[in-house]
Image (tube, rainbow, N blue to C red; front, side, top):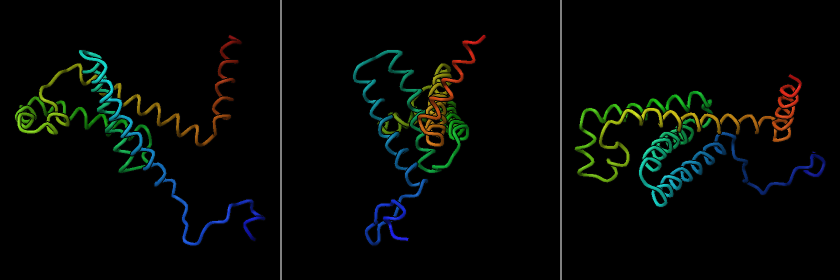
Length: 164
């Protein structure tokens, strides 16, 4: 068959199509960059608890995107669990005082490891993991069914709830 019979665009010699894993990896890198930009943006326009706890949630969201860079086929629950476990491990590591000592010598260490244990951070890390999970699951569902399929399911759910 020639390309006109299959309605495919002819490819130049040597051109290859990106694999689904490669596309997912590129999307994850872009999401990581967007997450870093959001973190810097929140620090530029806010302060206090919004910056502190928003940053905590974004920290785990960034780890979530990095999990997907390394393992682009990871399911949302697995990626969220790994990102949350890493966030909590870093937070509990702060109890040792080692991150605080390292932070005095390196801005990067302070940004990555933090300085002091704060129990509410554990909750906000979970918020970031849940946000990543929700967006990832929605994106997977949308890519499988298309937006029309997702909208159709939402319409049916609304109709069922209105009958009650």
